[in-house]
Amino acid sequence: MRRETVLITGASTGLGLAIARRLIRRDGHHLILTARASSLHRFADAGLAEGPHLWLRPLDVTDPGQRRLVMAEIQGALGGLDVLINNAGLSTRAVVEHVTEDERQDQLDINFRAPMELTRLALPGMRRRCRGRIIHISSVGGMMAMPTMAVYSASKFALEGASEALWYEVRPWGIHVTLVQPGFINSDGYEKVHWTRAGRVALAEVRHPYHAHYHHMTRFIGRIMRLAPATPDRVARTVERVVVAPSPPLRVPATLDAWLFNLLRRVMPRQLYHRFLYCLLPGIRRWGPGTAGATPEAEEAPTEDLGW
Image (cartoon, rainbow, N blue to C red):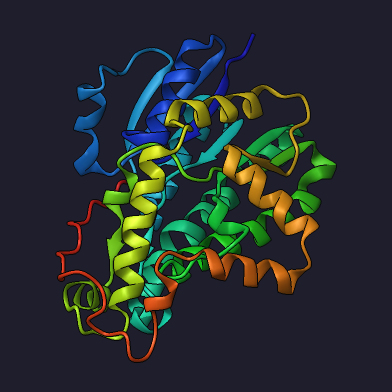
């Protein structure tokens, strides 16, 4: 039987690596694992090496030339792609006022434009064969937004909207489109967010008007992620089920908090829903005018690791 060809972006670390490990254990797939050229060494560190049915390829998902090169190689050598798992991504930490146009574009390029371009390149072959799967790793941030994460949520909301339209468009060809929505994952991911220049300044300066926003949200997110029961492998197990399911749904919440937030949005009146979440924000009474200097001493913003 012909092996299904599966491409995973951002596969050298975190969730991408966990998905790769799970699919490697399954027979019947030809896996193409990608990462930036500077991150390829992580595959060896993880004990992964190329073989007859495992390719390791450099891919900066924002580089049009590299995207075309990888997809052309798959088409020429393997006859096309059966499963595309768009996992590579970046999380930018900043309030709306602290995101420049270039920084906003960078976030959209990685989380929205890149997966949609890879999807566009994969679809002609899938349509010819009347089969295929497009799996986008979305986020709870694609169903709800948090302060200091505006541009990240914007990128995931865009991915969700385009994927929903795509679900209708390609269903006649037997192509499945699925958004896997993880919430908080117990990992070091919260330490690898990308800070905008203005966001770093605000976190470091205790008297900055937005310092309390960053201070309390950073500590809150870090604490929740350390306590979260979900692990990269548990979310990878959900992705694995989507890969093999006969007819996967459009949206699949992948963690308990994702299920709960999805339920909350559906049952609560929208105005009450937003007020309820606002009251739960950490240290909210110390946000806003007249509160500068009300948080503990300034701290240094984490060093960035793009993680894709």
